[in-house]
Image (cartoon, rainbow, N blue to C red):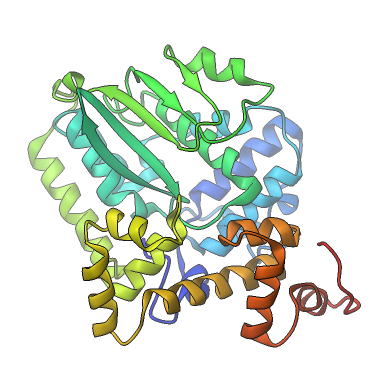
Length: 354
């Protein structure tokens, strides 16, 4: 699913491409466990409760992100993301879920996740690699998630535990590495996975034994798998996943980690830095210009729609300190981040750390 259209990040965030079913399940679980009404979860999203009940509805990434922000602010019981992910069945994931059910083996399932997860609007994207007998599925943010990140990763882990989501996929991880501090409820993780789980590793990776990847799946169906993948391809094409090089670079820039570095983006796109520079020149831009455009768009989003402190925004945008961010923001809009946030919120135009 494309985060960026030709008009850049902010347009992509406001394009309705995300199935509402994920937000609906989140709202349903909060109501069941905490007694929190749906309107609290939908606060500030523009989504009505009627829309929430329509499985065919699509919402934007901005709306989806705000739903998850609201969930975090409502402070549900620990492990909420794990329980949320476990609710999902193949039907929740549409044709992607059916493609996974029909896949030939675990290797095929991992390929499908990497190639097509974006058609369901997930807030994470995936890479796959193998080395020395170990297969690694890694997850990266599509755009900076801030405090929402642990919830989204827990949701992924919860999906992994539901055998009904994909009978072979994710069975028996060898090791799990997570990029946030161990939560107080880490024992919930341990009960779900019979493997070492490491926190504060700087990455989100699920590791498997390579030899297990070629075990045939019980529900494999070659003909249905072909049909499902053709539909996935069609959806991907309709959403414009090919796009211009500049759009692809924008997507990788915000996916992290180290997404603001030319060498890292080139590596993830399987290009040399020189080739990436040349391809961008052919489209009339440079990597530096793309970085500035993404940073400006993300900064405006954070300032106008969140309470993330300025220092934290600076870090999320790859700045060493808030003063560098402040200078860049003044170049973009002619005003300081604090004053812009206050004006956007209708408050007094005074500087503050929020």
